[in-house]
Image (tube, rainbow, N blue to C red; front, top):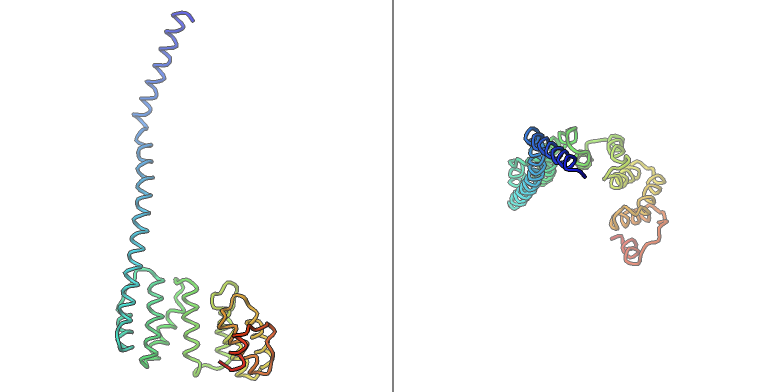
Length: 231
């Protein structure tokens, strides 16, 4: 390579370097800002996660403290005074409060709270369904069998967390209205459902026997004794 070619190459390289430094001076702040945002975003997410965990723990501790009172009315008032940040925590507090109100003989207040909660569209579906399930149980004496049936049927849709429990209540309504065959058929499905708890399957088998039927699912020895003894 001649000296002139070497010189031209060095000059070209120098020009490229100068252009690079010029671009860095002009646009380097964008890269720096991107890095700051990336690191800051990660730090913000970690802070938010830690803050949410701390708030959840504080709410849980407050609920436990509220439940330490000896009188159910006092427990209900203590739960009512809580102001959880998340909608889910508020829903849990309301469910607990309703239970304490019932124990304190304040059923009308419990019914009103559960009715309001079951209709709050901003709550996750599972909380609204829990409120409706408890509400239907509290109103067993005031609602007709068909009204209760309609309520429980709304809880057996696909993906419902309370589907099996609602099916059990529908079977009891079948018994109440004299539809024994329908009740046994529904109970057989519960007894064979692997998603049902052992206790629920056992109750279904016991009721099938009490209604004159025979469980289609083999019952384990300890469950068979419980079915035979009715306990």
